[in-house]
Image 1 (cartoon, rainbow, N blue to C red):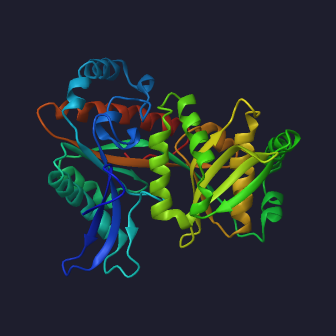
Image 2: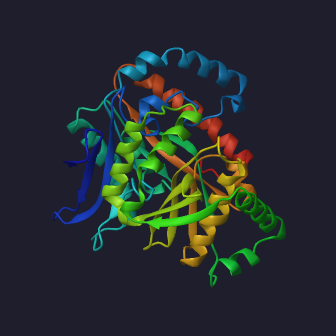
Length: 364
C-alpha cells in the first residue's frame, strides 16, 4: 500500500505471486469525524440516508430494527478507524493493469482477504467493499471472513445506441420522452442559459466547488467547502484527464454544472457530481443538463452507456434510465460488531424490497 493525497486516501496495490502488478484501487480511510459518509461502514449502519427502507420491513423486523438502532451510537464509535474499497466507479474503482496476468474476476475474488489484511495493517476496526454490480466471485470468500452482504441501492444507467450523433439519437427516442426532454431544454433556453463543455483537469474550477458545497447543504449534508475541495483535488490528480464538465451559463456566470468522468476504454460516462444555483434557476435546469445535454454529448462521442448515480430513481427512469442493483460487504469487529451486522442486514432487506417494487432485479 502507498499513502497519497492526504490522510483519508491510501492505495491498495494488487500483485500476483510473482510480484507482477495486476490492479490498483484507492482505499478510503475514515475516522469518526473525518472521511466521506457513504464510504464509512460504521456511519452508514442504521442510517437510511445511505440505504434501507424501514417501512418495507415486517412488524417484527421493524421492532427489532428500532431496538438495535437505539444501541448503535456506542457500537459505531468502537468501529473507527475504518477503510472502504469501492469496486466500481470511474475515480474510486478497481483499475486493472494494462497487461494484468490475472482477470478482473480473480482480483475481485481476492478482495475480501486483501482488504481485511489492509485493515489490520492500518489498525482499522471495520472495513467494507462497496458498490459491486455483480458480487458472485467474492461472495463466498467474503462470507468466510465474516462479512455481511447488503443491498446498497441501485445505479441508474442509460444505454446509448450506435448513432451518428445527437440528432439521430433524439430522433430515435419514444415520442413522449423526446417531448419531455425538449420541453425541459426549451425552458432553460428561455431563461437565457446556454451549455458550455470543458474537459480535463483545468475544467475543475473553484466555482464548481462552491456550487457542489451548496448542493450538499441543500440536501442536509455538510456544506463545508474544504472537504469538497479535497475531493475535487483527488479527482483532478488521479483521473483529471477523464473529466468532462457540462455547465449551464448565463451572461458569463456559471449557474449549474454536472461533472462526468469518461472511460474511453469502455465507452462509458459517469456523472460524478452536480451543483446548481437554485435561487437563480428554474428547477428544470437540472433535468435539461443531465438528461438532454449529457446524452447529447455522449451520442456525439461514441459513448455506449451513461451512469447517473444512486438517487432520484423515478425521475431518472422517466427519462430513460434503468436500475442496476449494487451490493456491498461489510465487516465490523469487536464485542458490539454483531449489532452493526444485524442492523445492516435489516437495512438491506428494506432496500431490496424497495428496489424490487421499482422493477429492479435483486440477487438475494
